[in-house]
Length: 345
Image 1: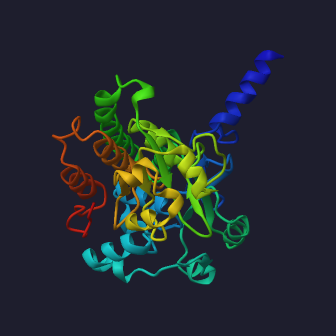
Image 2: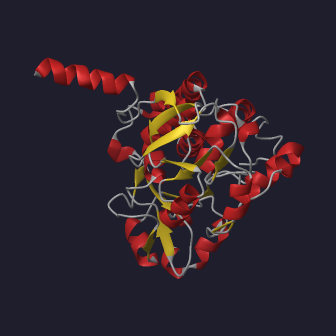
């Protein structure tokens, strides 16, 4: 009996009827075209036609990966947003001609369907009703994550398999790991209690907000040799009061690179913050960059770790030229150098 079960399992595996998480199985669709079956980062099984020629990306993590894997020409829309999209449009006329499908939180489903993408890549938190509508239109949807480096690397490998670019995916990951390793070697021996306390401030509405221990920004701080004062908080961009910031008394404050973050000079205008060490000693810094966030999910946030480490420990990283590192990374994985795109730190 055991032999029969094993033979059946082998038959199903090689026929493509069983899909294990993270393993792609090639097969053929009813139309005779080759397909690949993957499990995305929400555990959903998705069958995708091969080769993938047309992609729509709804999140900068997805677009960054597609660019990094040398497949930018497969994007049917711009897929880079705000300042970064505008910078790329100035550099690349072909990119500038592509349509924009997302305005704020609104998605133009009709325009997307008309371009017949083979696959749509979304972030894991993408609206479920939008996913359903895309799938009902016959578009395969793959969800990815990036709140940790592990998740980011998994998303790179997943997209690499979908695009048949696995070797490029590993090269991209290796370059990110090289940057992280450079930082680790220089800060590894610093005792935890001697590492600076840092608050990573996010978008401001009615109050301040801080990156919690569940967010990528907390990992960036840890990798850069800092202690996140809000590590015990849960959720995303937890609202905090000025009194709480004063109680934390951070040595350094990083302002998230979102456009609605408080300006550096604004913090000293709040009476409850005037005694905070970071404000008093003018150690409040905007996190880069002006043309694309280095603190948002995407493997390229390894650049943010390098920048943060140099900012926190200038003597240990005096020989590192962050702009030069960014120029080389962008040229290799975005097609143009950071400086050429108008990037500033």
